[in-house]
Amino acid sequence: MALIPVVCPYCQTDKDVVKNGKTAQGKQRFLCRSEHCQGRSFLLNPSYPGRTLAVKEQIVKMSLNGSGIRDIARVLQVSTRTVIGELKKTKSAQSGQ
Image (cartoon, rainbow, N blue to C red; front, top):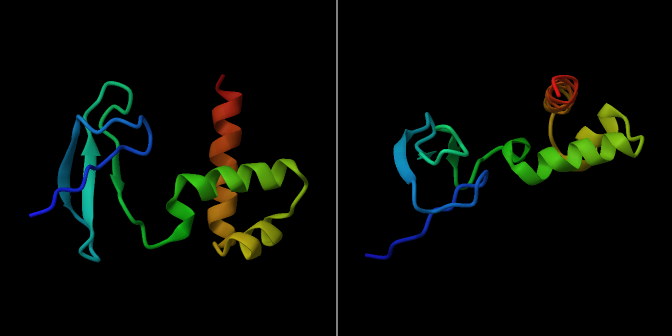
């Protein structure tokens, strides 16, 4: 049996990661128990690209460079609701600081 090391995408640790059930589609869900993550759960391979950290960062970068919501959604192949939701999260995080 081969073991695959699972690394948390948020804090980059592999020590405190445990299995945490399955999704409705049958994919394995993982939970990070480190102090930095505070119990965040994640998937290794999400089926929707809008859930990945790289796409979320790309949404913010493209909006700062003047791209519109529909343009970002078309280029990154995500929905406009995903783009709007991520921009709202970013704005609320910035205003809370």
